[in-house]
Length: 229
Image 1: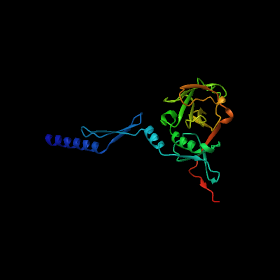
Image 2: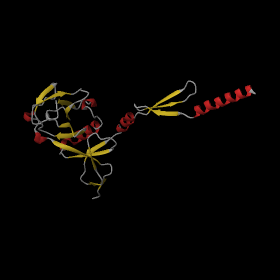
Image 3: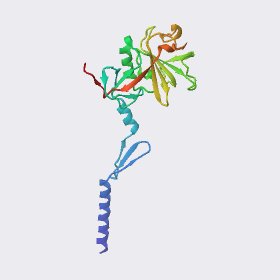
Image 4: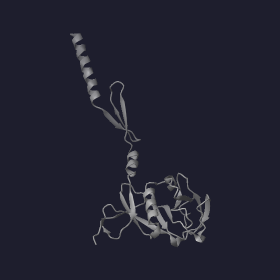
């Protein structure tokens, strides 16, 4: 009778192990990893489910950035430069005339470069950084020392020349309102004295012609439709 009872206990134990194998246990760690442990003796499966990874992947989708069309209607919501989860964006607030194509190409590529425009690695555009010590040290009417690009991050005001010509148009990015970037565009006569050197200088002191810079505003235009004439 005792051997039979021991055999029953052995079968019950095996049944318990079989049940454990059939039901995976999933737990999430603070770093965004998910672990599914299957107690099959030697198998342990780890799957990455990092929220930050999925966010980056989603933000890499192509974005169309064009000048706003006055002959469109529909629901348009204002957005900040670099906003994610948008597909079609339009800008307004500045006359671009001859620089429209250059500006459009730049904005489309720079939209997802949140830290530094130097990371775009485009030879056609020259990037510059003005590093400020504090938010109060941000008067565009004062002389600024701009350093040429190739920096991982610009903690201050970032500029880009849209061409390598003497009279290049410029785009300026300032960090305002917490983490929101504000962009300004200047088509010509951007600097007092027109002394900006786009060729060899690694740093230079310049002062903006404030009347030549206009803020760019951005809208999510995915739901806008063209009006029929």
